[in-house]
Image (cartoon, rainbow, N blue to C red; front, top):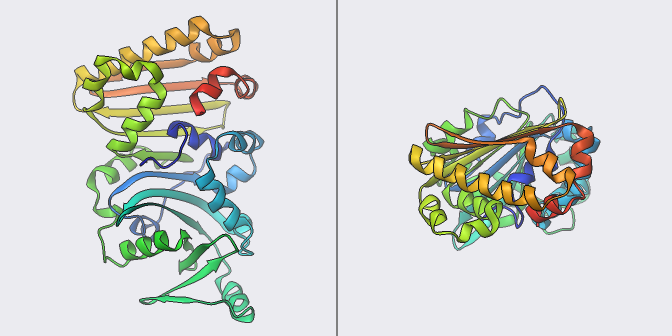
Length: 313
């Protein structure tokens, strides 16, 4: 499973905004993510709300799964739009299904929220020492871990998050590989981590027809994980790193991606050629790197181009 039905690398764009602050998760939030997480995205939610570029892009690339979660959050009456500072989404396997859980951090008026639940005679579910409440009318649920952290999503996803936080099942803090990768990105305002399966899915989408080549099978099986960051502080900047098992594989993957970029450049419009000229593909010490930067106006124009549509479809 991947977290979204569209190109994973572009989902971060949907939440990106110009900010100098880091989107770092607290320990309660990290502990609420099951160990076998396939992708986690963390964003500065307050900055996103203030970025017209991020909001415009979100309308184009935000997949249905996250639209449901975001809508439930906004229509819940919890005033999360005002109170949330950091928002995270984590995709993981739980039992026989695939789940997505949302985590919000901020300064929540939990006393007033609980009083409103009581006033409306909201039906509460007791789950060990936790209290789970319905989140609007979309079939979602929410649980406050403390005054600054809540988990939300479908009921079974919330249960899994609470099981992780309560040490019933292993949690993210016990995933050494992911924790180590997080140290490379969590100083950024927007960041994401993907496990091996998520990385393979994402790279197949990025490479398109080139993923049918024999060289790709060799590369695919040697992908270990990936991470990316994005911000709009000075124009648009996107950085991605795909960790491979060895330097040769990373160089092969870089060659494949450069070939794809060249083919798209030869058949693209002047705008698309300019975007590809602003993209640097390289490899270093077993890691494939992709870096893109442009002005706000150039990126706004790129949103409606066939190249962009082919990447996010």
